[in-house]
Image (cartoon, rainbow, N blue to C red):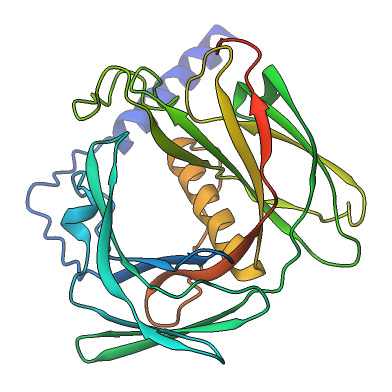
Length: 304
């Protein structure tokens, strides 16, 4: 018996050492041609904002939105009633202390319209369409939870309840708008971001968009309960406006695949997926979402 064990150990040693090999990455040439990446979600009652940037290889160093923005594209947004050429603009992200550029329009987006996006860049032209006809839902209730569990561990956040409209396949995304100061950090980058552009008591608006897409599959027409992990720190008495976005199917699938791809990068036990663009010829998404009426919420305690 002892001889068998020794033989097994020796065989394992030979197998392990036989598989070892040093691989050098110093002389590997990466031939990567940047592609356009476009992100544009239209919301009824707001003016259009379309983000256009150059894609980068996975192992590229971190960059700001300004560094990858494409300022010389030609974007035309049209519907059955109007057409306009979008112009470069930007807003200042007070939380991360950086400018975020995009292409904006001046005409308010309408519910019930189909919109066409034309992108001209270099010698190429790209097209995409979206129809805004998904129903706005009503949030029935929002409750706070100091802890809930999923496959990734424990989280704190909110519990949202709604009645799903019957007979329609719906795709929901969480949105929370808050006014915070620089003492409230992002849950995933605690003590990493140093805010040197806001005053001590200066308030600014942040929007927390949920990564998870919720479907009404097997729950059509029934009450749906969603457990949402929130992104920003909070203290007792902090207030927020909560929305549920009803997304078009193609956009919902894009963001769901994007989230699962991120999880596969962070967790080796999650199988990677291919991300399907909604715009032929380039990477990205052009779609729409209809927001619910805002639900006022106040945190009953400090974050754990």
